[in-house]
Length: 503
Image 1 (cartoon, one colour):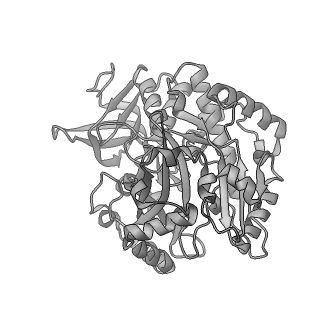
Image 2: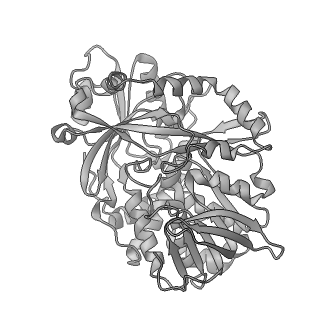
Image 3: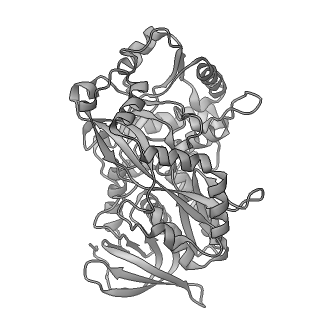
């Protein structure tokens, strides 16, 4: 699919690889900042946002660190480190400002269910976990980003907040929960497709589905020569671009390796597949309206944090529980079983082996997850929802997540649970590696990319003024400025329809 631009052009300013939330965000930012830029977008599938940006895959929570306990680790002295939670919460506020700008300017048309008020809750049981949650709550309340958070250990309050989770629970079990009514559910698939629709209406933008980038090489003049194959016809073509963004999710690592930039050497990837239990009983779905996150079991990775998750997908309420991890050598849900093997290079094999040795508990965890029976998965669900019945749930396959393996100063190779922007020294190419909390923080990540790759322009008065128009808090820290936070939240809540927080 192409728009009114000439599809035979072989030269452009920017090539975006992958039609997910990251490429969409970067493309819109660039066209707002430089309307005359020519952009070509290449997606290997026949529709945008079909991999991790899709609501049924990984994206959807609206990560804002209100309820995700892995963002607030306990230090050795027993205190709670909230630095990552503050960073993620602020990043989500920035995303909301950008989306509000696009809606106010009538740039994107979104369904009302694109973003929905959904309480974000953390729920734990056992004395040690209750003590941890209480300390976490007290630490978070010191920052204005978490103003309004509630905490209770009272079962009667919890029966009102989360009746499904409290039904049939041992009355003697020590429990606690936090609740943040500022939480949301976001359909990132709908958002991504709306932004690409906007881009396709702009002069100088061409979008190609069923086109796969096979190779890319730096030319002597500093531009990039990109080889693309049409997966429908088998036709091949070459494109030259001044700047390339590799936003292909799990497929980014292989393309980064093909670019052969020094900054990309030594990176590896560890794929983790996911599954959900999806509720099929509408009566059960209606009894729960919250995103409730628990604490990952000892020895399990951060991405395995269990949660009973209300989502709104295509206008319909859905209820998911998981994720259940698994292992696949694919780097994309619609990828190849040879993906992992193809990324092994002489410069990353040692970091990958070292990370594997350091993460033997993770390997054991994944093996146990793969071996789980339906009864095992039901038992995990019953820890959250004691009266769960097998016939009310079915297994749904989620997207692939590829965790970053890289060298650091202290380790030969380390496994990272987050996102990583890798860019060339001259700013002519950048790639995004990693996974959660990606989609929710896409705007902040792309602003970081612009600073690295368009540093001369982003510091100009013209770009600064435009970015501030799109993101009023740009250059300021909301975590240290309660008045600014209150002002921007009031604006985004009004535009995004989040004024009324449903309990």
